[in-house]
Image (cartoon, rainbow, N blue to C red; front, side, top):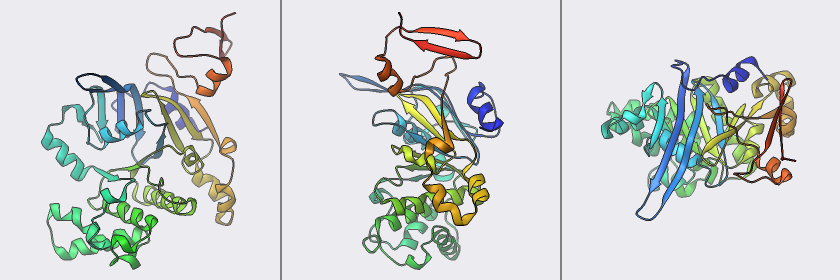
Length: 321
């Protein structure tokens, strides 16, 4: 593991005023209330994402990952804690600030293509649509839309409508739409959830290329842990907190460069355990979440008491005798 990754994981840097951070979450809390029930979706989540980073957030249903994505996208407000995106404090946002933020700072790719595309418009018209809010010349809007379709490999489908495109092509148009207003942060909600493996790899390759060539910060939320094979950093969320991080021992691009492009397909099939290591994340108070399979093997449940022992540079956790 590189020194940079080690430093990010183990330093208390989440609360610092780091100009290199695109996202900083400090003790983030989200509570949903109704007249009869109160649900805590996020309970003290800490997270730091650097500018120009491509990373994924994984977790089971109900873990809090979608709640976090909605807050990063300006679609929901935190209940407590601190949330900064591109140096902006979202807890201080007015409704007008949120509108400006969604128009100029963040782009969103939804899993459901019906939320991305207008079915009776062509691909190029769909990409042009967000640009209408900014005004400008029609010719420049068209040029920009064609440029973005070319980036996602769909220039030849520019005049196709929704019903004339496959699910993977629709998702690539959705990525172009999300880029239309030059966002600094791109959020993707299960972008590969409704396509086959081959198409999924194509979409992930587009994200990696955009990250490499444009320096765009990209956060992908998914339930698919296999994404770790493709991405250098994957953060796992459990019970509303960051529980662990899966990081590459060497970056994906470094491995491909060493192996050569001809061996890229072999690298795709490499076992994630050989290329990655999973690290449990300590929160700001020194607490951690044990992996669920470890707890199951020891027969532990939440609230159980355990024995903790320090032995040199190692900490042991065991059931009481």
